Length: 217
Image 1 (tube, helix red, strand yellow):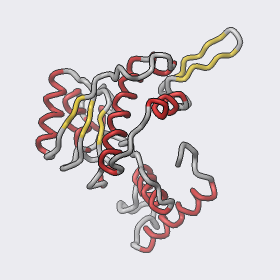
Image 2: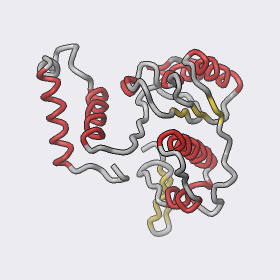
Image 3: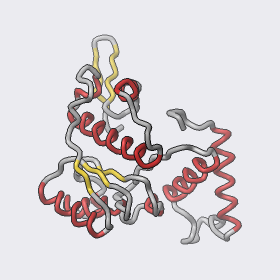
Image 4: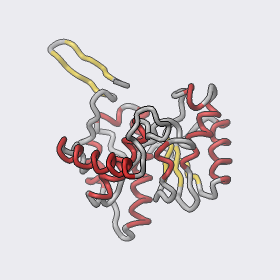
């Protein structure tokens, strides 16, 4: 919350509130029962509970596997949704082709919630557009934003410039819908990108004469 991990004590408190709530429904008591939430389902429930109890202004959820059958897809009325560049991931769950993956990931689209994505291959764009029509929403394709500073190191990575452009479009739409009249300044945007830190993702570690490039860790 606010770019900080919640404390262990807070995590423990909210975890047991969720666990005891499930137990009161007869769920989660027997490790063999099929009704017990799986690990990621339990974490998603916990995240919903924490953000509600902590009264956050905005919550950002990333799907675990795809979108259509993902646990986070219980959110029926998201403010805005976004899909980054599509690639071959989670193929055991989502299918063997990029079109299968595109179909699943577009499952997060919801009626009346604007959807955004970045330029994709022609066949994948067709899948996303068809799914947007099916879900009764609009789909906007976000190109790299030329207004983003060229002097910020993380933006020298092409996919990160594209990711940042998409994030900016999502945040701007969120403000437009939830806080009309408010906007992000270029200083806000530069500060957010400058302060970006995600261990093990596009991370460069320098040790003496050695440089380590860490990603997907």
